Length: 476
Image (cartoon, rainbow, N blue to C red; front, side, top):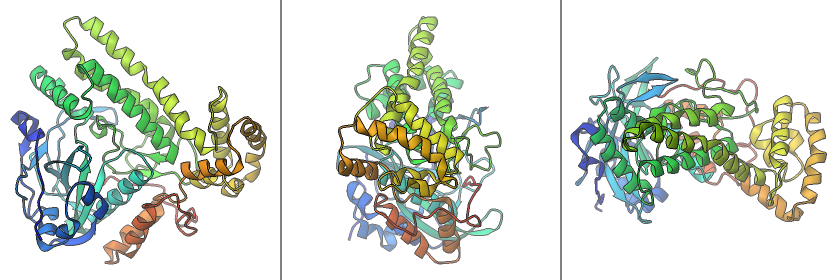
């Protein structure tokens, strides 16, 4: 049984200042946590070969596969609005790229693979908690239809990682359409390296948006992709937690699952991230932050938009200012089916916002309230069920004007609203069990989340008061 990666490493062919050549650091004793057989098949990889001593050594970073050109990417970024001129992959190594069975180019990256020149004071390692969190949540997002990086595998290292306590080490194999970020462009723009900006722009266009004729078209495409992505996030009650520019993929994928979380009780100002002290990245603020991040991206591209800077600023500003309209359209595309609508009317946004307002007032569980619209149990998701009463009449009047009948409407609602999401307390329970040597809760959770629209009475249950997780933490 031979494990072969058909690498074709386009990023490694960019100039040396884009990255640092860096092999992953070998570990003591690689051990399997999980291998994503379905994703392996998409990538043209043999899952059984991955689950061998040689395969686990590759997934842990102890063996570099033939054709790989390991590197750590350079980038910068605004973190909570503060400028950091150099960040980069401090605990991740890009092994290389392969073209999957659909013809899509995908990065294969190891997270927790050891120190790089960008590690600063870090050890370059990951402990099992953030590895399992990213595996669970990224694969759940994929099953929910949200553009995202994927998890190919998670392995233990046989080594201890020191954080607030000694913890078991692990490595995640992440798959992405690329790891190019807004912060990658900022890295070169801050250095006034126009040559590198042009090379990066050409590479991004060729890889992700081949229909784009230049930097303005690239900006337009990224603005549209981010509008669709953030609308998807709001539709499933997802809060990214660290929407820094270095965590914004120009491919329009969700990337870097640190202190992320899904809503239980709905409130638009909900924040889970322990490091988001002022609510910058609260649930309802994510569209505004996307605009802010895209403005930084636009600024990076200005030197490539011609010698007339005023004209370039005007064109770039128009592009970024299209985000609200694009987002509103995408948001309605996501939320209309969540309440069973198959047609469009001007008042639909007000109707949906009216439900959300009542959900906040009645402390409703986000997922179960929407799902309950299918079978008349939505009020059961409210602490104060009477909060739903006034809205119900408006909704029923709107449904009477929609062409879908009751059976079709129920199917639409159930197809748009998951029964199971990766609830924070379930993730924490799975992590704690794994630290104690029991992967059963992790396996139970990832299996259920692969089919999130299938009912599961146990995993659909919101947390009890003593189970609620109110803070999530960065995985570094």
